[in-house]
Length: 468
Image 1 (cartoon, rainbow, N blue to C red):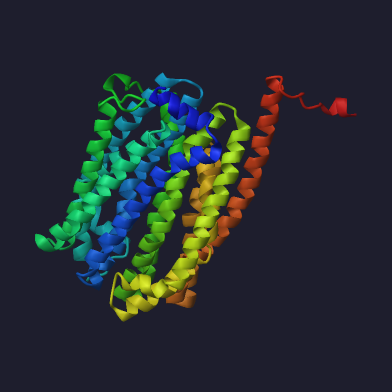
Image 2: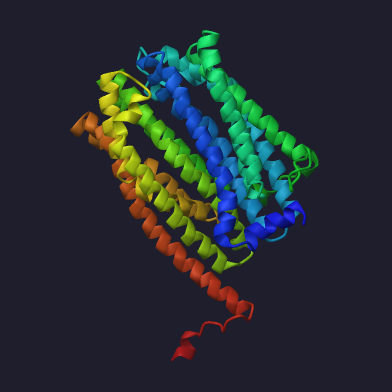
């Protein structure tokens, strides 16, 4: 059996739970390892002082912006690749791969050049105080030189998952993250580079991951080929990439803006508040990355079966995924609440950071049990090419709800308002997800009935005249 026959069986014929686990586990491992590297990065930098941790908190949304476009082009490409493969249009899928890579290389170069010009005002915008700014500038400027690499890695990872090469995606993520973790203490302390050493380690690790991804494509191990000859952009391909990618840009862009607003709201309380909120974001990202990883495994399964009009299999995958992710998020939230004080102590011995961080971690964990439900439906909308509901969800958590909460609560409640803004926004987003989930379920049921009627597997629905 060929590799692609095996991938097609996993996506379209394998037992749904087994296929999802096969697709999701590599993505989960890869994403969690990346989350671990973020945490280890923070632990090492924490040895440099509270202001250095604050610099990571300020630079983190900047790094997310670098990743945003890579993820957006990757997600948009992956959605169209999965549907094209489900429709047995391999050539269209390969043209999408080449088009997506071409777009992200151009964007990476633009980002690297323009970022150097606006870096200081951006760091100020993201909440850098006078004591944090020098550290943040050094860290972010180094990351900018690696912007094209960071963005390409995100794009290629999504494309590999879309064709069913989840293990290759996992290896790329893990190898880059592990190398980063190994190099962190060497550059930070061994070469006495301080916070710049952490940024250099990140760029080197990401570069190694991209080298592996390119080797996987050019060695012939991938089903889809990455070749210049396939770079024939069309309005359809670009429209599909942009349409599905925009919600991801909005999600991460708004997340960066919201984190900048949180940093600015926390800054008047001192560097300890900025550092504490940054630590909590990184800790929560560990659980969130696991769910993102599962969503990335679920997306090709959903897109393939929607393209193949296999609605029973699509619905089974959806139900299974919601159950599994909800069980995981409930257990994770419980652990974060119980051990909040101990977890924050890994990063800082500053008593103010410890107290504020533990309080914030408990608050953030309260709505987290339903985070899986939210991400699975967001991934479903992306997989099905439903840009509008995906965009609504992407804007809800970090835009429509969080930004107003940040504007309203801190002036009223002080630091408690900074802490409560995200949990309240999460609760409102869960409510919004529930409404959209009901709507898409009804739409899929209608499409399934129409398809069965068209293929002669079920009688067509009666008209109003026949019913009377």
